[in-house]
Length: 432
Picture 1: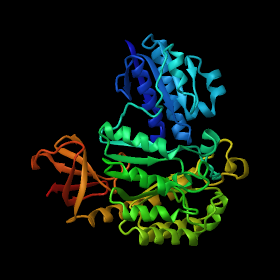
Picture 2 (picture 1 turned 180 degrees about the vertical axis):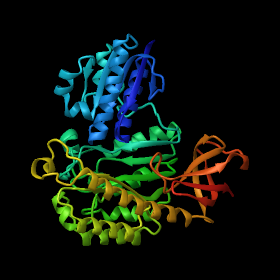
Picture 3 (picture 1 turned 60 degrees about the vertical axis):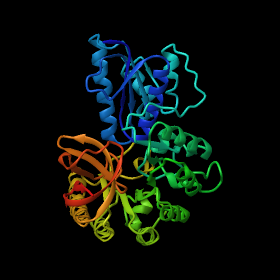
Picture 4 (picture 1 turned 135 degrees about the vertical axis):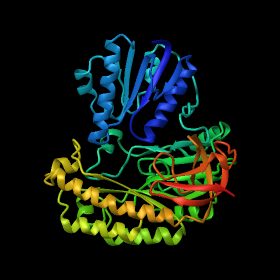
């Protein structure tokens, strides 16, 4: 056990990661040595930042807590703190069932961990953080919460209503991160197209992205987690006109059957969904679309699923993730619908959907062979430099491999690379 060291463990999404990075900065400012997701945690203090989104994520967070409880019982840990979405949602249950944890914090009161450790943190700038990503890219959280009330989603129950951060504060954070060497920004929110409606009484996402784009040193901006209803057209203009705004959009569509979308409480139809995909590709030529789909939602028939399959084949999404519906406590769907579709049927539909997407993704990758694309180098792995193009987001998308024997490259630098070969998840290339 290493005295004065804190091991921080982050579960779940990149929004949680930003919270962990801010906590780590505060702890370091108070004189602690801090590690993140360490393979061999040895600190006298541990902080677990939990996820409470879906069943599998909750189970993973619980197992991590229990693993550290065991370390504490064995005398390998003095203090254990838990924060994040799981403890925000199930605070009283966790306190009564897991007594080895010294204190539980929710999604928004984690800053008090420093006070609990009897340290006096003073920093007038809340967004300062210890980056856990490679120094050339960072996640930029522009809001908390969500005003959408999708029937299956527990996020609004956990995080509350949408709260936008002021434009000036976000731009100041971008300048701070650029000074630390960051060139690439992943803009994240539970629903970024709603940004500004609470603060400015209008959608201000296009204005925000323009102002971030204006900051000298910002090379790439990538947009995550948009919503299809009333999509702000002005954002497409910004994506089309600004060279450092990547032609990349992560927009969760969830389904295409009008009947299922209505049951999901998503105010969009099949026809509007098809029209939106056409508009995105027409207004931003070459745009990369990432989406998420759900199968097995209560009431989904074979006909509804066939509509979804036809849509995915037609749309040829660059990236598609999918998951089977699982009932979440307190949601509209859990309270009002019976989950009658068997796990076996859900898995069959999920497998069929992802088989189709696998073929699409592989074909789209092969279509890139022979093209010269701008890439950024993230790391060295074995005999290869590993990088990404503007239409690849870190950790979730395709990576591009360049053989080390082709010459020395610098981590965090940009290069033009000719694509020489492709597979489902990887591209091969050589610097030109």
